[in-house]
Length: 210
Image 1 (cartoon, rainbow, N blue to C red):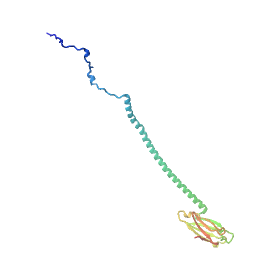
Image 2: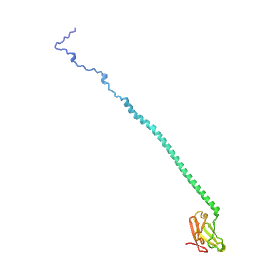
Image 3: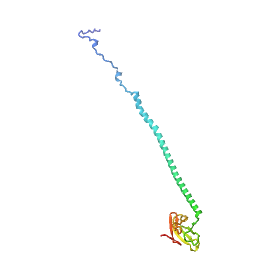
């Protein structure tokens, strides 16, 4: 049979206010760990550099490569045009010089003939009559000769030997005569290009000056 439990009078019951209440934590709350998630502003700020770094090279490097290739092609074409221009200029200069030389030679052929011959009439004091002396200057294969025919007396003609020319087309160079000095007995000056030779007048003939 059941026995009744008698209470011990020595044990006093404590009031409820004296007991400390502790929060009851569930097992699930003890195991949960707080997860830190970045804010939206921080996530956007971290993603922006990656977006710029991936977009800038695609937008900037490709046009530069294309521009550099086009620039190289343009420079190559420019060099080709420059070389062709120089060659054409040299060719035109050569053609122009050839035409100029041919024109001068043709004019000299009409004026001096071949061989180059120059005729001059001049009073030099060697005449026996009132007829000027006649001078004929000739370029025979580069050698210059001057024939003096005194006026009124052909029998006392004199042949003067001038300089000898060396070089290409030396036989095509014309000869010019001038008579400087005393107007009654002038000297004879032979000029061929930049070469000059002077003959002194002795009164009845010409002799080369030393």
